[in-house]
Length: 218
Image 1 (tube, rainbow, N blue to C red):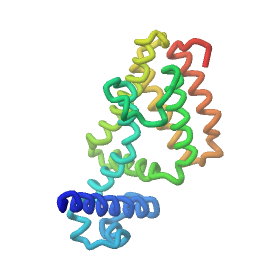
Image 2: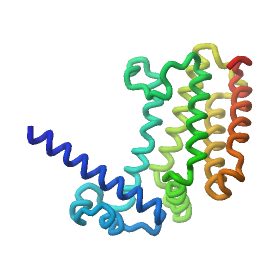
Image 3: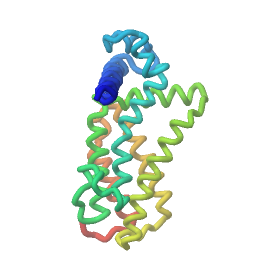
């Protein structure tokens, strides 16, 4: 019994550190946040925090992985051997196009709430990486994973003869990722009202429908 309790306690402490880190990163941004800030926010000892995370970068990447969990669940949507693990957002869809629409709805909601999320801090992390030219493979892998997820989604529509794309689906996937990334940046820098997110997303839906060759039925 004791190993189970110990593991539960470790997970509790780890989550406590991550929750403290989220609060600090949102308040101070990535560059101005120090490990000591996170230690102070968590209420734990310095050694206790460093037992789980050796530096600020490792901790932040763990946070990003946590927020990427939904994307991993989306992959399960296309794996018939893992139906029981499908995220609720993608259950009971009547068509692949409906799955695409639900994905876009989720993205739209996230962009509308961007100021309350960790996204501005993640963008700051990207910008530091670009400025320092470190070419962190972690960031490249995140981009490739986003493209891969969309390709899986679009390929499902092609395989079921629901989509008849006018250009390769790899190009469509990269277009969508670039569009969403650009919209997020505009929302952060200009504000969600100025950017007119709903209008932009409606344009994306209409464009995507044409690029994928979807029949004119919802």
